[in-house]
Length: 493
Image (cartoon, rainbow, N blue to C red):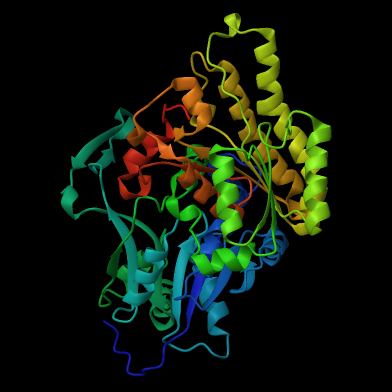
């Protein structure tokens, strides 16, 4: 244990290890720069530590050749805690030693300074894990993060050309799967590597193993990690991580009432499809917090979203009244159920115009207004976008198109400061659904007010290119396996 006698709080530096090149994922750029949930992986990670009150500053160890790109990304995101971005080493250990040397050279660094090492490609790190890891350094000089092993682990040995054979099956109850962060006092991690450098056989894949081997008298405390803190190392991990960001309730935390009012007062929200359902509830909610809201719908203002001229006129009306348009939302849509070969040409044309062409036209018309205010376009999809289903061919395919449109526009317009996101509600009690399915058990449906609240949170978030799920049950309260199962959800919105 540590014997810290000075009551002053030591400084804490989060060291983000981003030296990998992405070869194992089969990418032409480092995997930490690939976008998931609308942002590069490393940016999600940096934002988690930026938001952690326990962290004073951040040091990034980045792959050579990408340092300027990461610095530009950090500047654009407005991250204040990133002190420097320096080259990573050829190995994990080389990167750690580079970080130690860099921090040691600071005039304010002392023996008690804390280094919290985290993989850049673990973007789902929770605030709890960060907080508990740093807090553990109040008592210990070395801290690891780990979770129980849900699989049986075997030890094998290779016998010539015959392959592998089991030599031992350790007791699973004592086995843990290591994660990051791994945290140390500066004096401890420096001493461990100084000893390791004298060993000609030295090799290690993580920092705790270096302390364990070369400073065996130093206890390494274990903080409970979580299954969500996955590492993106294989191609499938990119897909899973992207879906987990959609499922995570923390993706769009709700501000308090005072923050809603502060951030919405003086802002202009335009809602297409604002006559009833989710659109009307969102308009009411934003208006209650001081936003200037303009609602347009076929049944109230006679606005046909499939008509570009009427969309242009609606946006011009809002801009003329307030001098700005900050948020544009489209909840308009129609749900045609039936076999495609039995669907009339008129219904096909109408579905395509309202569910696909209208959002395209709204996006085009809204762009100059949103570029002027650094605003956001919010679209809506359905759980059926992940898999076309019988009797929903038109609806499902147009909803899948909304996801692709969101992701493409988010990239096209990001340099102009325009955000584009998409909300994916579970089955929701709306007039459109009632018309299609009749009376249903309300306990099985989301309230449209719930979807409206999440929609407002998305509008006030920094997300871009994200598809945010809204569900009755919070998947983060269950197990990881159950959450993955929800990725394959089969419900129709």
